[in-house]
Length: 87
Image (cartoon, one colour):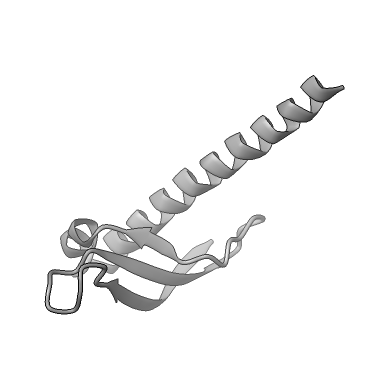
């Protein structure tokens, strides 16, 4: 299994003359049964803390994917539960 970071985009939600507000990391995941094509959104602080270590940056991406997948599963379960209550 492997995560390859393919792009880094910086967000400036407060304007380009203000500090960076976040970072979008585009990636490709190989060898996983479930694979999202959504970019990973992290804070500028998370990016700055790991930008010089590729493995650390990939770890941040993996942690964010796990958190996003967990929320997705919880949302789908809540939707399923609402269908069962409607019956």
